[in-house]
Length: 290
Ligand code: OGA
Ligand code: MN
Image 1 (cartoon, rainbow, N blue to C red):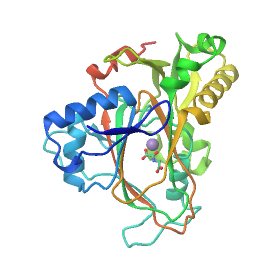
Image 2: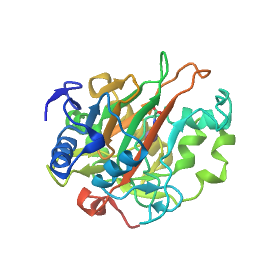
Image 3: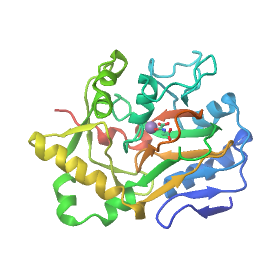
Image 4: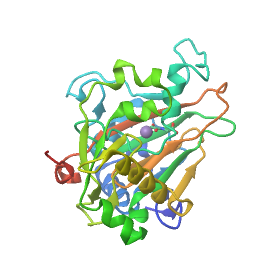
């Protein structure tokens, strides 16, 4: 597999793989690169929804927000991260739907608020914007490795509470009040995710994080803000400017991501499948029972 780095610290572009016709041997190389580099970019891919699902299933069970994990044999519609309505019109900037897309512009890992969090997001460029609309990634493995010990020691053995409506509330109280953001109980995850394949540790945090277990509220939220600020410094980030046919894959255990603003009159459509983290991905060691 021919790869070139995306940044000094993480991520590679993979040049000679057709994701639409990936066999088990090729997937093993992709999975290997995923464990090592945390973010993978493939350009000029021809990959329809069925092939997207086949690729996702090689990583593990497909996440279905309706049932949490897709049941075998159940019909699944590949989710679109999109501002385009069924009738082709674009949702206005202050529409609740657009506001929800804006909530994606806070640094996060996907699905930390679900009882089973995500391992990976496989995002595909379908309709891209002229300017803006990049997706940015931040490597929390590199950020954790470089973190000053005084900051590290405050969070290392702690656990963090996650709630979807928390990130939505930072954008709009009306948005946060929608029932769709209150489907799951608060989730508690250890603050450091150790990769079971290579032992690398990464800070596990998100815009959904609202409290540090056992820490006074103001102190906890301040600490969460400081940690996110540390790991999202420019030397740990990559900005992906989309082209149609790009496939961007990242490890949710070791990477934060966010959308960035664009001219909201322009349509922007990405296909997104998250795969649920399983025991072999180290999720059981992340659970904390209180
Ligand atoms: C996502 C996401 C950001 C973007 O698909 O989970 O956060 O750039 N997307 O649209
Ligand atoms: Mn996301």
